Length: 441
Image 1 (cartoon, rainbow, N blue to C red):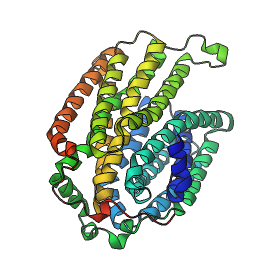
Image 2 (image 1 turned 30 degrees about the vertical axis):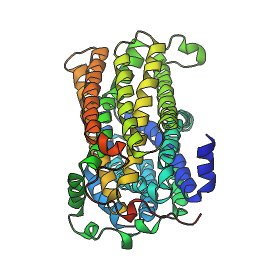
Image 3 (image 1 turned 180 degrees about the vertical axis):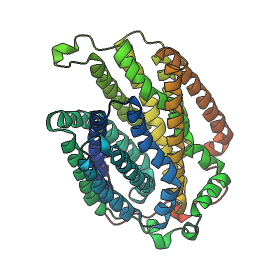
């Protein structure tokens, strides 16, 4: 861990960007808990909760192409600060919701909040390469993954405590405050000159500039393949978010949960699943990076190993017979998904020119949001309508994992000769902005 601590100490710009993520992700889990508590208080309709997730997912998919153009045209730091401030104000609007007649306002505010998140996410992904050196990209992404994993456990726990003891309104205030603190940290970040609007791609100023991002990806099939890697993974892990709840409540509720003051054994198991997922996504990329290193050809190999490990974990989940096996299989699955996520992000940040990076990350984000939504709906359909048992649905997801792993294997074999020779299979030169000069530290 010393390498990651040194990175935070030595690079104040990455440190501020990272601290902003720590605070913001903590607040995000407050929001998840509070929103679920509020919608169940307003209505007992099961479809209302589905609309909540639709209001969260749909804006991320719809606005991502536009958000990518903004990230390439305007100053990414200012975009992130503005998004954080506006999200903080938007979340405070949830305090105005009092009775079932205000449900429409609940959904409207959720759509606005996640539309702003669609702007923040590609800008942040593209900006990371503007604050760390090229050889530090994998380490920075691995640290981000560890942070997300920690906030998954800590944020969900604290959000639940605050909502339970002080009410959903207090949790919303805490979430709004987290956005404002994040904006303060991000505002202290200095990005490289290549990320400034005057140094960007002139094509990003055209009316349909997002199409230039698609044309760039079409010209660069290697980058297109890497940008679709997470979408392939989310085609598998999207449904698992639904299936985990059934595993926890129906198959493996925690025996003796009442002795620990937990009234719902299923909730206790779900909490343990989240802890296991946090362990896998946090530790997996660190171990894989220690083994493979940071060279682009090793990152491509690491993505493949991530697919293999994820698929093996899902296949294990389809056959587990007890809680211990469930948790170990979850660690294996998330070790793979965490590695896939970190290595794909670092590879894109390494090879994509700065003037296209925002649009590439927005395309990646939109694609994984779409496939995750498809997977989630498919899992629910197979479970509720088709009548498959939960472990049968998990077996279908494992088969899907085998398919996407095979596709990545073919992709890797196609470009392996060039990668082994130390080159990159790019049809156009990356240009100097792909490896930016860093600001003074």
